[in-house]
Amino acid sequence: MAPEGSHVQLDHKLINHNMWDIDVAPWTLTVMAPGGKAIFPQEPYSPHPDIPDYPGQVIDKKFYLPQRVLVLWSYTNLADPRWNFLRKYLVLNQDPKATNPQKIGLSNRQHWGAYLNDGTLYVKTNKYEEGATYPDGGCSFETFTNAAMLELESLGPMAKLAPNGGSCELREDWYLFDNVKAESTDESIDENVLPKVESILK
Image (cartoon, rainbow, N blue to C red; front, side, top):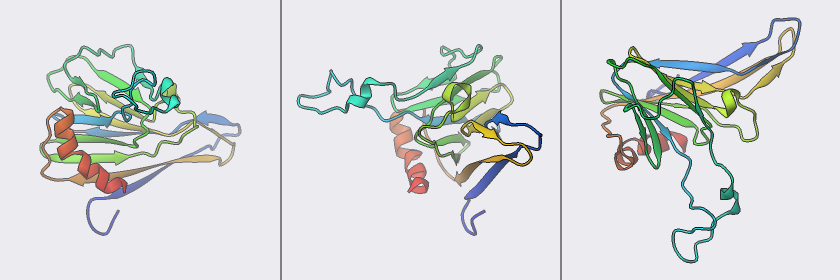
């Protein structure tokens, strides 16, 4: 924990005490109080390489390829009003009156997720490793909610742990910010949440 401020660094470690190899991935769940909203960044926008936004725009050919993974569970309902799919962010609202759970997973190359509840913004970071194989179809972040709570879940890459002590680790960094208000719009999140996130990612 930092001597000043709210920063907490967590190092999670899995150790194989078996006598054989095991394939695993670290998975950490942060369970949040009801009544707030989870916020995840989308990957930066780029137009289709063949359809520029303005004449003469040069667009990297890599944008012919997919830029993110979005994983859905059997009970995921994208028509559920708790979801807000914005151009720059994904927002999932926790509703204590909800009768069905919701969950998605994503490959989060922006390295952060947040939860805003009653003016307090919680941000957790989990560094995405390019080229690594992630579990659940490629997820480094997941979020789940039901009537009681909402989870912000971090996942590390798949690892083969050698017997008798092989290990892997996952590092998270947590931060808290007071007096934050934001609506579920790109403009409001840009103005009120993103500057807080950028201050810790520098």
